[in-house]
Length: 142
Image (cartoon, rainbow, N blue to C red):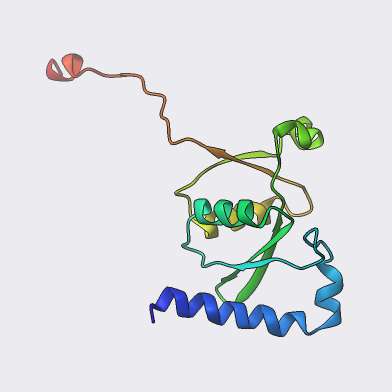
């Protein structure tokens, strides 16, 4: 069995152990339309694109769980149909463009800096803006 699969399964078992505790279940009350809690165990070096795909597939509030160092961290993600679904986030400048190739650990590090604030993660394309700032002609004369 692949070590990454094993690590996700181990994290999944940790989540199951945590779900046995009433305090944990009470804190994470958001459920799918059918009343189920949706948890996705991910590794810190998984891509955010993987997470986005899983959240879209769940089509409901989803708890993304990872282990960073020795801490289990949980983020709730809700698929937004459009940015207008979260006008307060746009008004307070909490939108966060994220590349699909970004790592989950990086996203969780950003979310820790925004603790207590709702953040709208916007899946951005990997397009670049480029501008030639030096063509080398001035460097040759130095």
